[in-house]
Length: 417
Image (cartoon, rainbow, N blue to C red; front, side, top):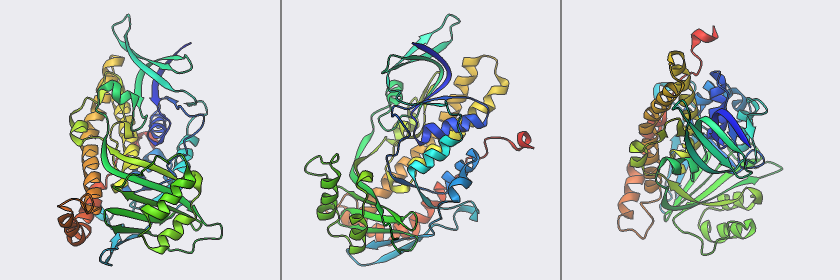
């Protein structure tokens, strides 16, 4: 069966749904292909910082989440080797803008908030992409053929790959495979039916190459993580009971009792163990992330480690800027393929250096905070010295301000008056 579509978005995660919504707000309809039978719930929770809230405001949905989740004002970082505690503030960022904020939300709630704003037929579930082909039409224009697992072939004028870290669209464009950071992360959601009674803040712990922490989401739920250079002896990621036991008895055994008490209440369905991957910043800066009317966004373009909490945030930025580039190019169009290609090229050029910096910054932040690779490396002592005396006090505030980014509005004021 052959179907023709104007714009097809591969992937119904944060980047895919946000891009579809951004396009809708500038008057462009897109089809989203999601391989799962329903909205993805994986990932449990994520922290959205200043730039994400500017993007969500442009998408017209920030108020829906801010009415449910409360900002976090500070983070306490405890060095378990020395006992020193440092307090990191999240307020008073660049230019003291009122829109700044750090809020941890359920990933599924974010996806549902974005999906609710889309027409009911926008997302085509159970649509697994198996191949991509380019076709030259009779008028010398080009179309992209998307072959799905169920036998459907979709002829699309524009294809936007939002299909994650191992993106098929990114591979088709020729981007390199993501690299391993050498670190792994265990994550989960702890549930306290009677309430946990903790302050609404982020707590982090540093110890011998391990970084762990937890953040309260609401009065009954806490999101926690452990990031380590140690891999598990056996692949037990598919067995949550064994994975939780491994976290408690091995990965987190030297962490404070308050952290272990949180881990103990984990909802096993939320538990995950994943390698932390990233794309080389120079590959992002100089690669061809657009070919004709095909491009990528979110993790498909710039997978990064979670150390700056920018994975989902930067994907929301992508969506707004991509839609704006398409919208602003449309009025002067003389040839469909030409203006669309120019719009996508402008989007890539506008994004590549910022996201390359975010990827590099996230990797460096993780490396420094975890002592430069653990105690096994000869330079780990210098890395820890730099972290404890300079990073949190002088470098972190600068990084916090550099993350600040207002992607602007999608709809010019003149069109909304």
